[in-house]
Length: 113
Length: 131
Image (cartoon, rainbow over all chains, first blue to last red; front, side, top):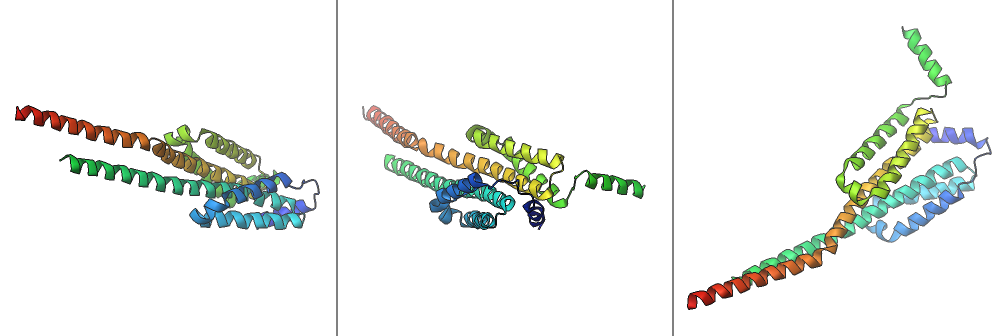
């Protein structure tokens, strides 16, 4: 609501430049995160997607203030979703390797007896 | 006394210092999230760049908050700072797991060497008793 009020206030002031760089960065990060994050961090990733969509809509309305806010948030949200996905993947791999080493140790001890 | 408080409030609003619960809450949350990340040895060690990005984002939020910027803008920058701190923490987590994976070959090797040592020891003991 406060964002809307702010936007209304600043819409009159045409000095706000279109946040093209921020929007490009948000699009790039969302698409980079897509493959891993949609599966491993679906909630966080869908928040990023929703904010990117709102940034695109705001841009179409020439509402550059909201476009910038949503684009910047979409970028960090997508990056966060990506790190969550990367963490889930590497933790799983580390767990599996740890288990296989334990299994090997047990097998060798059993045979050694 | 109440009139004095009222005057102060009026002065603050006039100064553009619209202190709202929204901005304060988001600043508190961002500071706490950053503090937790910055206090972690793992984050300092494994995600120094991400931590620095978070620190700069929080400094920008603090600057806007102190200068009495629009609460929505303050809340936005606080949100970004909090997410940057979370990114630093999670990056440290996955890099720690990556480091464990990178040494897994060595660990496996060590397990095999230990097993061979035990075997050799058992053989030499066995040889000694049969004599």
